Length: 184
Image (cartoon, rainbow, N blue to C red):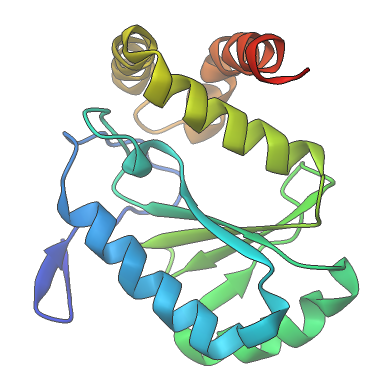
């Protein structure tokens, strides 16, 4: 656990899977980081969202805040990297997802925030927004997702890639349900 501006906030070592119960403080931690990012990046940010499991009340999560930021163009990434470097952010590249750049905050033994930079109308943008919206509007899927995550975390505590891969089918199914419901 690390202490951020007077509040206790969990962090996670890179590559490890550890789930904790939902914590209402995550919303406040997101708001603090959103303010910082807006101050540092200014008009480069077109949209910003709290995403991932820490953004969904009642869902167990890895104790890392995920943030989605829409920027106009990936040509801005090098400048963004320079601007975020003093705040302990590391550009980790695409990480296997070609339509986003992934930044991690904190040392490898204590990651606290992940920022996903996307361009407008990218698949990753829609998938993240649809997935969160669907879970929030269909509470039964929160329990299903929580159960799956707990099962996978127990099985793959030290193998984050296998944990992540194990969630793919569920996530894809929810995104497809969301597209059916939300797309006209």
